[in-house]
Image (cartoon, rainbow, N blue to C red; front, side, top):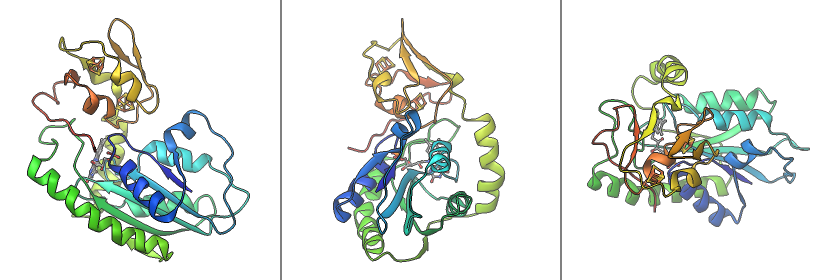
Length: 249
Ligand SMILES: Cc1cc2nc3c(=O)[nH]c(=O)nc-3n(C[C@H](O)[C@H](O)[C@H](O)COP(=O)(O)O)c2cc1C
Ligand code: SF4
Ligand code: SF4
């Protein structure tokens, strides 16, 4: 069983590679968040989590669904694969602690570097096309390594922490979650053609089409709405002016 969360498609692609390679099923964490239901895990069935890294840690929605999850068996091989634009800080330690709190053990974890999607702060933007193409090219090889490791149920953690991981994950991340994850700054410009795509692609149904799209308060900051808009009409305060868009094809 593979539980995945994805805003712009990178992690969905990773989950798809794993599901095809392992002949396993993929379930959406966003759907489980909206409607929790009892899942059935086989005695020796592997349990994988796939998600993007948000501010050097797992997204809150992933941690919430993990916390609420229950099975009749203890997962025998629980692993995660996270995708990131650059580095993941202490994501592995944070995720492992959340798993341990349930009385389970996370046996393995991997990171995969993919095109960046974060655009809501100064100097953060999508990658140049050449960098995007290089990352996508290299992600194929990386996924072969990850898939091989999961297939053989290898134990261990192979994540690209990057520099200053403690500062990023334990000091900056809490500030990000408290002050920089609010959907209040989302708005549309006059370029909006009211096509309704943003409403359709929000994984947690946080956008309602009225006269124009309106954002509710239950946002994961996945930026699916921003990156899908065909008119580039979604802005986050003034931070996204002249920033690019990206979707995994
Ligand atoms: C809110 C947010 C925070 C992010 N924080 C990080 C980060 O701390 N480190 C990093 O390397 N990439 C970061 N990124 C980039 C994503 O982790 C990366 O692009 C990921 O592959 C997106 O996955 P998805 O397409 O499945 O949504 C962030 C993206 C978003 C939207
Ligand atoms: S996707 Fe863009 S153009 Fe379409 S309704 Fe949303 S903001 Fe408007
Ligand atoms: S409102 Fe936009 S950023 Fe927030 S969860 Fe929905 S798609 Fe993601």
